[in-house]
Image (cartoon, rainbow, N blue to C red; front, side):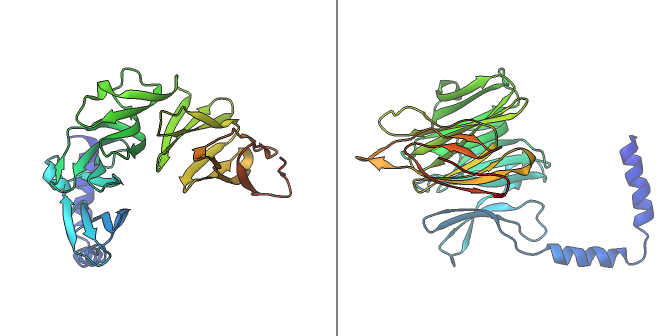
Amino acid sequence: MDAPSEQTQYARRYLDHLPGRQKIRERIREFLAVETYDSLQKIGNRYFFRKPLPDQEQPSIYLRVGATGEDRLLLDPTQLGTGKYTAVKPLRVSPNGRLLLYEIKQGGERTGTFALLDIETRTTLADVLPRGYLRGFAFASDGKSFYYVHEPLDSKRPFYRAVYCHVLGTEFSEDREIFCAGDNENPRLCLISEGNRLGFLVCRFLRKIQTDFYLRTLENGRSTQTFVASADCILSPRLVSGRILAMALGRFGSGAALNARLRTKERRTSYSSISLHLSSYRNCCGALERETFPRNPQTSHSRP
């Protein structure tokens, strides 16, 4: 018998005979047996979320139509047949509301498997990303493909970082690469999206952190353009209604908030690059309207 098992048995022999233990256990169970909701995703008037049932080890994924509608079970993790410690979590819903991306984890592990659920039929598609880290995912507007950054645990090129486009029903080996961040252990590549725009965030962990951020519009085959180049900070951007909102964290806790509006001309979106140096908050900006808010105005400044 191994040491952990012996320790568990020893603890059980002592704790199981403590007076009042059973009442305390039952009282704690009452506190835990409450209805909770998390991981909410909303498309139109349809709500996707997790909630556990009383005495259920892991929560299931549900769908509710309207704020006061009934909850419809979509996926119970026990139905996967991989044990009571299997957990599922909704991550993304396709724009047409037909597909749900969800994550599958075992026993609290950090990595997961990523699958697509057909919401109407409650069946899982064959397009499953194997166990690993998903650094970004975006459904295409046509509902027939998606974009992703994935780091599989069993990859033959563990340091290769790229964004791919996958067409549903095809092999992942046929996926089209649309952006590459390199093939070494320094960079981390993340994907963000909003509407017909994709953002590629590249962080390089060298002697000092360097961050690049690129933008691509998914129409008419437009090329990827640089938005931020070699910034000495950690950038956390979001694409929101034609704007880029970002928090930038530099060395020694210095930081700034960036609010950039993407200007349009003749229905075309133009970008210009920004070089961020948070040690002195020097911002070089061309065709972008932006607002920067230094965290510590006494020790930093902004200049055009």
